[in-house]
Image (cartoon, rainbow over all chains, first blue to last red; front, side, top):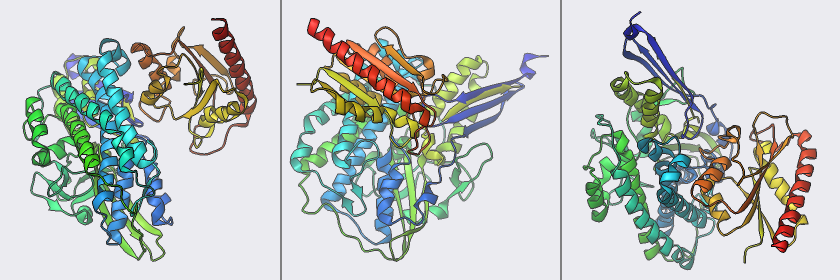
Length: 434
Length: 159
C-alpha cells in the first residue's frame, strides 16, 4: 500500500503547557489532513448554576474561583455587569484602581505564558526547565515579571490567587498612596525587563503563516482596553456588551465539553485576545510603545498567530507603563466603595481578560439575588479559531514525523494561551494517518 | 533576620487531601522553636523559588498522587535526587512543585539543604473531606519532620 494512502492518526492525549485538561486529534488520510478536533474533556463546571440564588455581592468571590491565573478578569466582568444592572458607574480613583489590579493580572499571566509555556516552543526546548539551563537570565526575568504582577494583585486585590478585596461598587479596602508608591522602583525595573522581553521574543524565528482573522475586542474612546469599551471588530461591528447575545452564539459540539462560540450571522469563528486588542487599538497605545512594536517587526495589525508572543510582550510593557501612570496620579480615596441598592434588573459587561473578551450577564431580583446568569470566557470563543488555524497550518508539515508534527501543532495551540479550565466551564494529541 | 529553617506546607485546604501540607504545618507551628518558620503555600513555582532565596535549610511538605499505596510517606533530599516524573503535573496550574524544584536547580537557586516530604493521598476533589487512612501517616510525617529539624539544628550547631 502506498504510504500516501495510509491513515495517520496523531493523538496527543494530554496537551502540556496549557491550563486545564484537553486533547488534540488529527486525522490524515491519503496525505491530506481530514479532521482536526481540539477536545476539552475537563468536565463542565456549572458556575452559572452555583450563582443562581446567591446574592449579587457574592458574585466576584464565586467567579474568581473559575480561574487561578485570571481571577481578576472574572471579578471585573462580574462587578461591571452587576453595576450595569443597577445603573451605577464607578469613576475616579476606584476606576483607576480597577485598571491597576487588572494590569497586575496581565503582567503575571502574560509573563507565565511567554517565559514558561511558549518561548520553549520557539527555542526547541521541551520545557522552561530545560530552557533555564541555557537561558537562566531570561527565565529569571520571566519569574521576576510574574512576581511583579502578583505583587500588584496582592496589594490591590488582597491576595494573588482568587483575590478577596474586590466588591461590587469598588473595593473592601483601598490601598494608600504610600503603599502603592512602594511598588514604583520594582515597576520601573519590570518596565525595563518588559522592554528587553519585547526585543528578545522579536528575535525568534516565526513560521510564515497568516490568517484573515475576524478580530473582536473592546475599544474605548481614549484608553487601551481593559475594563470598558464597545465590542468592536475589524469588520465594522461596534456594539455595547448588552447586545453580545445578538451577535455571538454558543453552540454545542460533540467532541468537546466547552461550548464553541461563533458569530451568529454565519457561524464563523473569530479571534479574541492580545492580537485582536492590538489590531483594533494600536492607536490607543502610547507612542513610545507603538515605536517599540514597530521596532519589533510588528505592523499596526499582526495576522501571524505565532507572533502573538511579541504582542503579549508589548502588552506587558503597556501594563507596566499604565500601572506607573496610575500610581503616579493616585490619591487615596475618601471611600473605598459606593453603596448599592438592589432592584430587579439585568446587567451586562465585557472586560479584557489576558486571553480576550470575557462576557458576563446577570439577572437579579428585588432582593439582590441572582436569578440567572451567563459567563462566556475567551478560550471558548477562540476554540473554533484554534481548530481553523490548525486546518490551515498543519497541511504544510504533513511530511514531518508524527513527533515534529505534534510539536508544531501544540505550538499553534499555545499561540492562544488557552485556559481550558476556564473554557469548561487541558491537552491529549491524536494524529490519525489513514 | 530569617529563621534558620523554613518549613513550607503546600496545598489547598479546600481540595480534600491536597490540604494535608497545610494541616501538618498547623500542627508543626505549635511544636517548633523560634529558629524554625512554618508557612503555608499554594505551590506557585515563581513565588516558591522566591521564598527560598537567602534560606539555607528548607523542608517542603505536600500531598502527592504517584500511584503508590495511600498513606505512603516519601522523602527526598532534593540535592541528591529530583522528584520523580510521576510527581509532576498534578497541579491545577501548568507548573507545580516538582517544576519549581527543577527550575530552581537549573537556575542555581536551590537552597543548600532542601528536603521534600510527601504523603500519597487519595481525594483531590473540591471538598474539605480528608481520607481517614491518612491520619496515621500525617502524624508519622510530623514526627519525621521534627526529627529532621533537630538533625538540621544539631548539624548547624556542630558546623
